[in-house]
Amino acid sequence: MSDSRPVPGAAAPATPGSAPALPPQALEIASGYAFAGPAVDLGALVWDGQCLPGARIRVPLSVLNRHGLVAGATGTGKTKTLQLIAEQLSAQGVPVFLADVKGDVSGVSAPGQENERVRARAAETGGHWTPTAFPAEFYALGGLGRGIPVRATITSFGPVLLSKVLQLNRTQEQSLGLIFHYADTKGLELVDLKDLRAVVAFLTSDEGRAELKEIGGLSTATAGVILRALTAFEAEGMAPFFGEPEFDTSELLRTASDGRGTLSVLELPAVQDKPQLFSTFLMWLLADLFHDLPEVGDVDKPKLVFFFDEAHLLFSGASKAFLDAITQTVRLIRSKGVGVLFVTQTPRDVPAEVLAQLGSRVQHALRAFTPDDQKALKAAVRTFPTSAYDLEEVLTGLGTGEAVVTVLSERGAPTPVAVTRLRAPESLMGPVDAERLERAVTSSPLYGRYAQAVDRESAYEMLAARETAGRPVKETTTGGGRETGREEPSLVEQVVTSGAFKSLARSLGTQLGREITRSLFGTARRRR
Image (tube, rainbow, N blue to C red; front, side, top):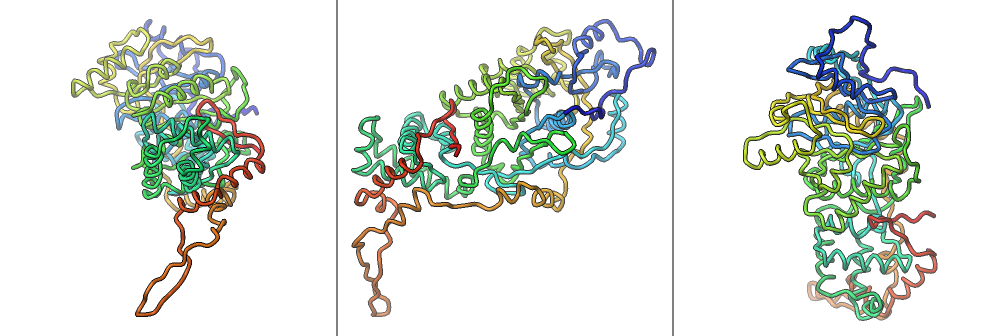
């Protein structure tokens, strides 16, 4: 859909004689950003300490599916940069996904507030500034916090991601993969944590071990570790993240009625103390999109731009299988029209195999107070193309809202390195009040679809329903009297008695039909 409205923050058209001539080196840098097609306007070039509003620093819309990195120390303005890019993408019809770790991104849904600092930044960078609200949907993992609940079934989450969340080692991860393989071949969908516990318990029973003889077996010790990890995970209040209705990631591709892209904001303050969980859930969203979207090749503009905040948490302690899957997903998802922008503190937080695939870079200030900081600074400088700046000096001296930028041109070549004073976002730079956020959530057409958790009949419930004949009678003495009743068996006892689960699995295999297939990341979703 075409949109003739001006892009928020767009620079005023240049007129002959309206700006002083640029110095030769600045002119050479600025010419590298003079793109013919639609672009995201980041701000104005800074050269020799001067901000030059006539020298625009921009990112072509057509290359934003080739991924990027937004980096910088805490407090240098990364969040505002994300907001600036996101609202311009929205204005040009591109949906955006944003993870809001600190709870200060919800302001995208409200117009900004003009003040002296905003006016000064607009004057420096040479653009119009108009307070503007953007269409937004707010989500929350498992419904913890304010937002439409985002859940995944255990089956679709898969063994690789779940191993990362449970912090399993390589042997345990492989064993969990074997458990998933068994459930998949039986057509047995694992909806929530108790379903997975039931399967693990069965496969460590005498009957269950026979089921696995042909595919490798599962040690009792390893199964015990996995069961304990699942129990601890649930005890920490993690159960709400897994279940139904499962979130359909195609919701992230929506546009508003006026043609602007919807900003999907995942509110994470309620789970910010569980970084392994939310970073892995972000990867599930991305992997599920990869699993579902068709190949489109190079496009004029992305179908979606996905901001992966706190990216270092994703890679920290990751297994080789996990890193390989990330690398492959990032490499291939660009052909499906999805761009990924990793957000972290230094380029060293991102593995070299992934970093090599990031075409655009927005690097905010780095600190160099310690020897480790100095190493990180030198490593960051080496990741940039040859520059007309002394980047070691520049990167430690950047002010808030300034960054060193290089992107891909429309023909795919790196642009000259440009120190840039970034524009101010036109939406609210801070959170909206709780009442407004609550209204936005409950009035969403998606709220009724996902708000209420559904615990349909699955492996655990079907096992529990099969009452074992002749269950022992327990006797208790209360005040001299005798009270009789049925002893409630444990889940493991239910699983291992009389082959109930074995026949259940076979019947489920018949009912559900084909074997579940998985993507390269081990995720899956059965399409009915």
